[in-house]
Structures are given as structure tokens and as C-alpha cells.
Image 1: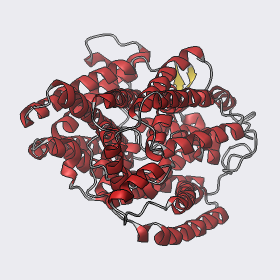
Image 2: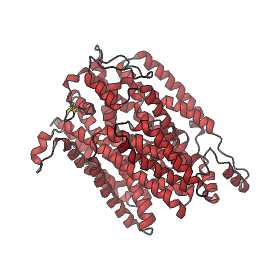
Image 3: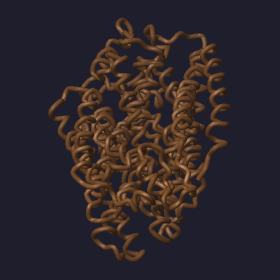
Image 4: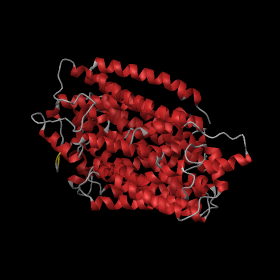
Length: 607
């Protein structure tokens, strides 16, 4: 066992508090469906924003990002654009309030406000439910594997093997650990619903923030008077056509990792990320915990504030930990245990660096915070999956007249089934990066076209939505077998074209949505885009109706918002590395952007 009694006490206290929270809030969660799934839409925006940020601060993603920072240095800040991380800026500036105005419970229910709820709209409804569940299962399996790798270092299998009445092959040890803590996370999230998830996220965020700051300070102290053994180009975020980082003579396995990742033509890789990221951001949030938090806010105005708050509370704290552990790992690389059955496993840098270089007490904070990070991500994703199964399958097709007791029972049963399926899926995952690349590069590629058109083009209908989603998801599932050795991102344009073809074919082989539905949607949501025929129809009934002419300002705010997000990301990296001039420039840029957004966004927020 690598944990001291202080560390174990911190962890057990946290786990005990989660059980108490889940059990204490169970009655409030069981009041009705909205209370269970959305906290009754009464939770303040800053708590929901902090909870959303906590869901994004997951073990698997952080392990991956520490690996990226170690190998790619400052250039690693661009790789998370695969998600893309800047979709939060699009949400902040306009899409969150558009989404919240619908007053829906899930993304599938939202479709009824756009396409209607008749028989013709059922296909689009089913397609988004399928996508949502695929995404939820993928993210839960992704977190499951990351947690297992994390726990394996802190609790060596040799120290607990004698307590297990069966043999476990080395490659499945992470899965065993994943199962144990997955079941624990399931309890408090299934029993307490959104109320316990948000409160648990708050406690976890406080613990993790204290730990991240402590790690950053430790890294600063160890770095003082030492030079990092890194190649040329590691300390700058700027790049040319090629990556420009060569670990030859320093760490040969790092070059092998770069070759395996497929990021070497970095200019092309970056342009592909940016191209995909813009369209993905225009499509709005995917149907997961992020969307559920937006729909759970008290008003459209608070939805915008919430998504803006996410980047502020997430990025500086998370990157303090990332750069801190990276510095410690680089200074003491020979002390790390990165061996695995397949060779050097750089995804183990995070847990190995924590166990080797972080003192007792602080180690307990980080260990507990990251364990809580897994639990918050897992519980948030599980909550989203429950919402889609119960609200969009059980209540819509199986038992529309279900009473509150039946709804709560349905949530409990659904939670257990979803967890079991995600665990089974986790056994087929090779590593964190493989499932991550499939989710962001392939599956989400099939989602983008349909969900982009739905916001900005009045003629787009449910038939187009269904065929766009069907074409995209089918291609996403088939592409890994057709192109097993290619990075999914590089095949995304083909996937996008296939999805667009499905959208257009479906749209023009069926009539537009009912004009009554379109008028209600347009006058309520007030999107900009290609809505002229609907605007004309709305003005026939209300000549005073003013269309949304905010496209230019929204796009301006998006650009400088992304700049602010980049500053928040790289600020703690410059601070820990002691790079004073870049740090000063970054602070000046961030200050200027904040002052601009105060006038162009904050002062103009509306419901």
C-alpha cells in the first residue's frame, strides 16, 4: 500500500461523506422526475457551473493531458481542441440561452420543440437517444479504464491479491479496481440524483483545488535552480507545419509515442481540429452531462453565466496540476514506474508522479480529489443516461402514465443496468487514448451535421435529422474497422460529408416541419440564421417582433472568448515554469479580454 494513514483518512472521510449526502438527499430527489434529474431547476448557476467543471475534471482525461504535456510541452494545450474545449465559449456566448429557452428535460425532448412531436418526428427522437446512450457508455468506459490504471499504482495488486478468491490476469487488474469504485459511485448518484451530484462535486472541487495548488508549489520549489531536460520547442505553444519536437538523445520512447499518436504533421493536425471544432461547437452541446446542467439552470441568462463560469474554475486549477506533475516527472523520470505488459505506458505518469513525489497529506488530497473526479464524471454521465432512458424511452413509449414511484424505480433500475453495460464495455477498451479518439474523432463526427443544421436552417426537418444522424453514426461505427490504423480525426471530413448527404437527402424527401411548431420555436428561442420564411410568418401575427441580429457580436465574442480560454489554460504553465515575460503578456491579454467581454457580453445578457 502506497498511502499513509493520513491519506487513507482523507479518502475514507470523503467516501463516507458521499454516502451520507446520497442517503440524506434521497427524499428531496424522489419528489418528482424534475427534482431527481435536474435538481428541480432551482440550483444556482455558480454551483451548476462548478459541478459541470468537476464533471470535466476527470481522472482519465487528466492522465491523458499530463501525458500530452510531458511529451508535447506547451503545444499540448492545443490537443484538447479535439473535444473541442472551446465549445464552452460558443455555449457561453449564445447557445446555452437558446437551449435553455426550450425548458426541456433532455436533448431528445428538446427536438419536439424544433420538429414537433408527431409520428414523423419519432425517428429523429430515437436517433438522438441512441447517440446519447452510445456517448454515455463510451465516456463511462473511458473513465472506468482510467480509474483502474490510477488505482493500480496506489494500491498494488500484490497487496490485495490474497483477499480475492479468484485469479486475475495482469491486464485486467485495472478493470477490477474500476468495478469496485464504479459501484461505489453508482450508489450516491442513483440514490440522491442531481442534488447529491452537485453537492458532492462542490466538496470534491474544494479538495482537488487545494491539492492542485500544493502540487504546483512543490513543482516550483523543485524546479528552482534546475533546467528541465526537454527538447527544443517544448516550451513554446507556437508551431509550424511539423511538430518540431525531437526527444532523440533524451528519451527515445517519447519519439515512439509521438509516432503512435499520429500528431507529427502538427500544422495539418491543428487545422483539422480547428475545422472540426468550429462545426462541432456550432452544433451545440452533445446530449450528456453538459447539456443536462444547462437545462437544469433557473433561466437562460443563468445558463449563459454557468457555461462561462466553467472555464474560469476548471482550466487554471486543472493545468496547475498538469504542469506541476509534468515538471516533477521530468526532473525525476528515472524514479517513475511506467512499465506495462506492452512497454512504456506514459498514461501512468500522473499516478506514478503523485505516489513518488507528493508528500503525505497532500497526496491524500490529490488522491481523494481525483477519485472524486472520477465519481463526479461518472455520476454526471450516469444521470444523463438515466434521463434519456427514463424520460425519452420509458415515459414516452413504455409507460406514459407512470406515477412518481414508478418513475423513481425506473431511474434506479436504469442506473444499475447502464453501469453494468459500461463495465462490460470497459473490458474491450485497450487504453484511455483509444476510446477517447473514437468518441471525439468518430462518434461525435456523426453528430455534428444534423445538430448544426437544426439551429440555423428553418427548412431542416426531422427526416433530415434522422438520416443525417443515422448516416453519421453508422459511418462512425464502421470506420474503425475500415481504417484501423488511421487517426479518426483524419477521416472526420469524409464522415462529415456522409452525414451532410444524409441530412440533405432526408430533408428534401419530406416536407418542412409544421409552421405552427416552427413559429413557436423561432419566437421562443430567437436564433439567428436562415429563418426568413418563419420570420415572415411570425410578423404576420406580431408585427413588432424583432429578429435576432446578434450574429456579428456573438462571433466577435466567441473569438476573444477563445483567446481568454487559451490564456486561462497557459497561465498556470508559465507561472510554474517561471517564464516571467510570457506570463506578463498573458495576464495583459487576459485583462483586456475581460474588460471587453464585460461590455460586449456580460452587460448584454438576457433571458
